[in-house]
View (tube, rainbow, N blue to C red):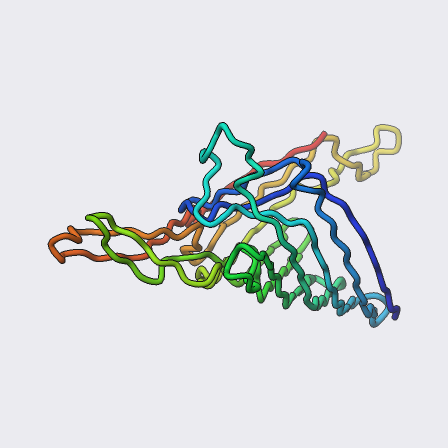
Length: 288
């Protein structure tokens, strides 16, 4: 067993920020400027690691804390095309952030059945004086729970089966809390920043791989006996199913409206866009 501690202090000279004023999940990269100073971050971690039964089992638990300075975000409602003749820096606001959590890991590496389980509990927040009334708010990629389970079963030298399951808390976003009509225009009121969460992301994948024999039997012309030699050309077939139970995981959410708000026949709804349904695949791999 061992105890490990770590400390890191980093600079980053490019910034990544998200647009809250558009429906699509849009991320924008910015270089460092006189106003957008390099991001600074430090991280401390402490972990306990222990192996059991001659390293057949690996376990660990680790806690961490990360502080971030000079983060950037767009002003409320701002878009990259606003004031194109002006300095882009004027569309940005600057703040700080922090993240902390605990990670658990267990791995089995013996026998026909192998695999590992990893779980992370985490929290990530931001604070900008010019956003959310100066109150802290969850970061876009704040995920409270993140679980991964991977399992492999080796039936014999020819067949191997695998599975993986992923679960993660949904990303945060800002949606309208109410709406009103002003001068025949539909306007929205927004609540606290990133106060809404998408549905959780989870998915099960399955696979089966068939391997060609690595050796072939030949007769030694000198002795007349059978000998085994490695094949120069080897191949395998991999069969897989992505998203086995066809989970409709959200890619992004958007606000849609139907009807005429001037006549009172008007409905507002939040709709979800997904990308990948169940996808079967077959792959042929070879080496020589």
